[in-house]
Length: 266
Image (cartoon, rainbow, N blue to C red; front, side, top):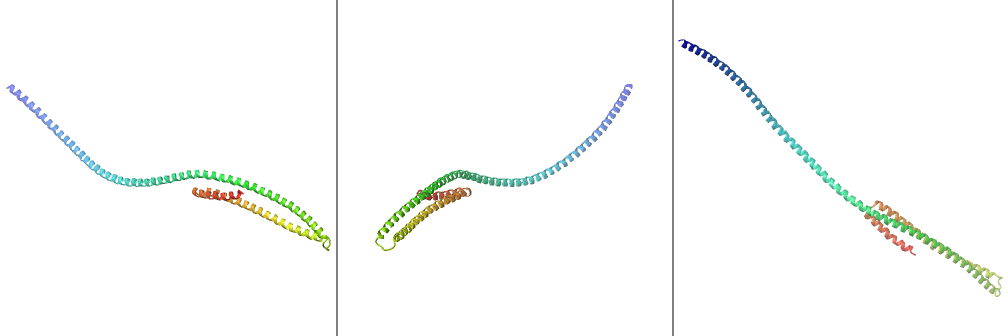
């Protein structure tokens, strides 16, 4: 009986402990369930916020893509226009460079031709200087010959006057005995006429010689002035006109200089 009572007491205690433990487990389970629901609600809320954030980011991404596309198209148009302008500038610069190269080539050719023309002009100046020197020498020789010839003619005139005077005197003396006119009249008249005639001839000859010398002198001076004028014209042409015109001008001067050389060769 005591054993049964003890067993019953032990069973009762055990049942009470089990009931208490069960009650504790239920409370703990309820708490855990409550905590779990709180966690789930929090997670759902977080998920919803994240979903909203994702949608918002997606919308922003779409808008950003659209803006990027618009900006891309604008940049493409802008850079295409800049590329087109740069290509145009490049072609223009290339054309200008080509023109500059052509001009440089022309300038080099002109410089070479200029040196040649300057040398030809120097030669022409030297030829003109030599020719002028020859002209001066020729003029001096002609003047010397003129004065020598004039002196010779004067001497011959004096000799002729003396001869004529002697002849007139002789004829007068012969006629003196044949004529009743006063002595010496025929001699005076004859001598005067002879002197006058010879003086006119001598004067005419001197005038002719003076005229020829003056004509030759004028011709030489005119030719010198023409050569100097041509030289000045040629100098101006080489400074102002292109090379082709300089060649034509120089050719014309060289042709023109051949004619005076023929005249001066006398």
